Image 1: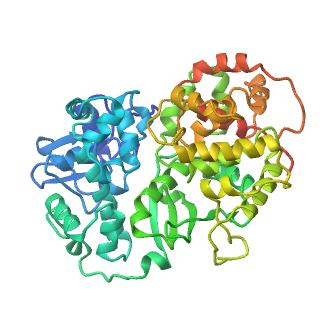
Image 2: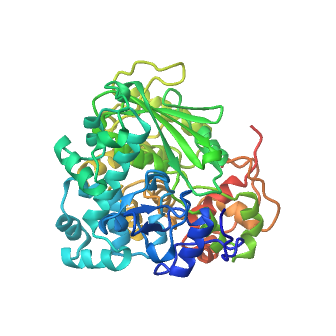
Image 3: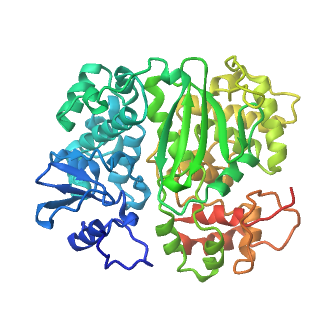
Length: 519
């Protein structure tokens, strides 16, 4: 029977400061789900580490120690629990860390920079020495960058071994290992068993990646999946993506000149998104899953964000109606940039029409239609640069912006590399012709997933912010205004938004969500 917790059940929690042993102990004994993924419990007598919600009988306090990350527990010699499965804990939002080199490095590690590269290269990219980067990681996370990156790959491999019938060699490739031997050695050292032993004789299927696999991406409630799905539904491009019956589906480049299929639906009873993938190359699976997590903002901690925003009384009614709102990310930064440029100063519906025409003009891989709704891919930067976009409804200036932007990405003048500061990103993008602060902030909000990006010049935001404190309706996410009510100036909204830092992107989504329009 669970022991009662002395932690205030009405107060939102964050990662225990310096892992306060008393708070961790209370959360462990009560199996407080609010702490799941925020720290890990290791038991010296068994050599195993667990999530704080593990259903196993609670160990004696004298045998327990706590770690901020699963990687730190693994580095200390502990094995992951096979019962609570630490790889299924909700992710920790990197953006909750203070801005600095560790946060930048973590964002790059999530992009796989250490899967092939070395810590010295990452340190040089950040403008510091390798020894300093290692010291900062040990101080803040209790683990080295390489240990964290390795544990990330091993836990992903463990999830694949548990939840799919993929061949072990495919699991190794999917987890970022270049050889089966390297994977087996790393797995054996970390878990004291081989990948095959973990499966206990389950069958493998050589065709599982092509035929399809299913994985779960856990999140921390509340999660307003319906609102995020509405946002994506209103922006679907015919043939590329489809939203129906609570499910998002689309086609994506598989890295081999063809198409892979993705579908995502919510499983609220297990606080996870269920994703199904088919036609994906093994080597591209981990980075693709990371982009899917970003698209659906699964690592955000809505409770913490909303608790901080609720200090502004003007937002309280909005927060009550829009609890669990997430910021939609993107699977591809270039695709988002094209969408944003075409969508400048026109309706969402008109932008969808123009985007369909752009795809038709660009050379894309031939796709075998999946069904009546999924039959084409989004073009690459090279295809857009070379395409003839005259006569499809775009002005010459807009065509020039699109092709200049695509060439700038190819030349490395701008990028969607994680870890960039918001100011640096905005400055580089605004240097391109036809790209202004609104577009740059919108890109930062969704492609970098920067929580403080805020397009203060957006007309809808300025209109809705003018009425803050009045009744709001979160049932519709369409940002096309039917009327022209009074609006704040861009400067006034920017000034008002300082009270919402560093979570202004979430406020922007809530303000957009509050607009209710007839279909």
